[in-house]
Length: 250
Image 1 (tube, rainbow, N blue to C red):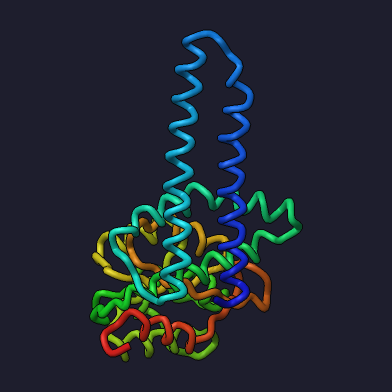
Image 2 (image 1 turned 90 degrees about the horizontal axis):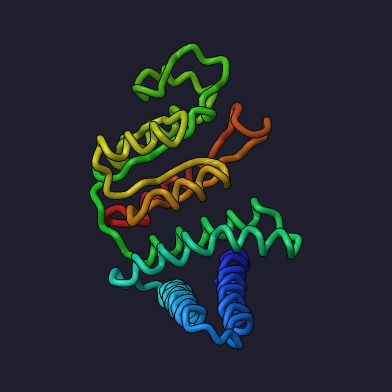
């Protein structure tokens, strides 16, 4: 596993240990209570937290096995999602305490997610895959609105949109430009995409991946030479590599 993937996995394990510490602390604080109601409450809390701990442990172990073996187990997808959803906020907090930046943790999370999607060995048609782009890839001075129709691009070459259109045509993929999460979700729902190649910053990618549920999403980080949300760029080769990962023939 690459270093950046190990970072998120390490934080996942640390977060799970925090949950275990919570179980032990709760038991210690309540074990000397003599009131029946307190004992019932104690055992209920211990049982619930213990069950959560087991589920999270299975989820983390599944992530590690899938990455090492490059093999997916569809029966464990839901448990992995639960582990990520529950522990992700704790990993951010744990990382901050350890002096690790939020962006770095999110990049590691995206790398782990991409590896898990790769392990599924999907064989989707290009027409089943959506390339989802942020509007900030378009030149800020461009007068042509492409959020509703990517084909409004005049291919002037001032931004990377024309190259992405050519790539989409090569693989027969759907291309959409979204101005936010609500529009992105609507595009995915209306187009019935079976897989998504999403281009965005660390924050938007990590939140989008979490909101996608069991839909496979490959994340590609954009480049921000002018700062966030204006005249950003993306490496076309990385989008193509993601397409090859989940499309037939990849």
